[in-house]
Length: 234
Ligand SMILES: Nc1ncnc2c1ncn2[C@@H]1O[C@H](COP(=O)(O)OP(=O)(O)OP(=O)(O)O)[C@@H](O)[C@H]1O
Image 1: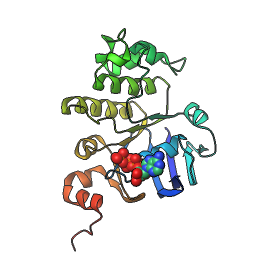
Image 2: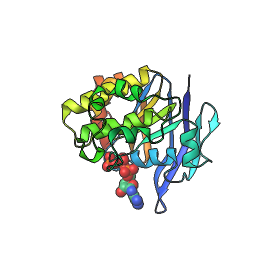
Image 3: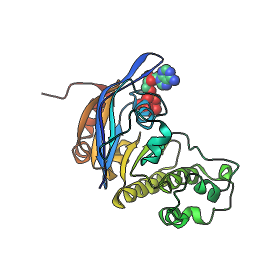
């Protein structure tokens, strides 16, 4: 059982405070969905958590071990995976070679093909020739083979057909059901809320909602107001 805890995190970009005093938590078996309008600071938060950019303050802990003061590489080795925006495959390598990159010695390729059988038939194809959906499956599967405890997934659905997005959502749910802690940043709010447990909404760098996905699922109007910053009706 793992638990990932973020407290009072602040992240600056070009000396501007982009993420201010954010708390977030997720544990094994759970999906925490992070929503918010464009520019709210979701990507910046994930980059601060994984160490792509430095934190300006706050703490990040995995199973009680402080991660905020160690390098991105050491955070990854401690069990924190970050699937970044933009499907960062090694385009000249085959799908299978991509899966070998960063693979934990105990992790088997079959675990990736079990999660995404679609990739099995494409294992010898250069990653740059895969479809957008297949590339997204590949980067998620590659992260899985690093044997993480928590996985941060940023905007996996961008530009993909709804049927592919549905497939990816199902796989993310399975990652959690198999024991990972997942933080999912997503623009398709309804789809993410359908597979998530806990929901967070960010607006202008601050967390304005922390509660059950079911609550927001049942009240899309409230979600809309949270995005826009309007007060709820009296
Ligand atoms: N390299 C940068 N330098 C300065 N400001 C930046 C930089 N990257 C992003 N920003 C600003 O930080 C803010 C938050 O951006 P961020 O990408 O984290 O938001 P987001 O919630 O992930 O939005 P989106 O859904 O559009 O990706 C935006 O106002 C953006 O313009």
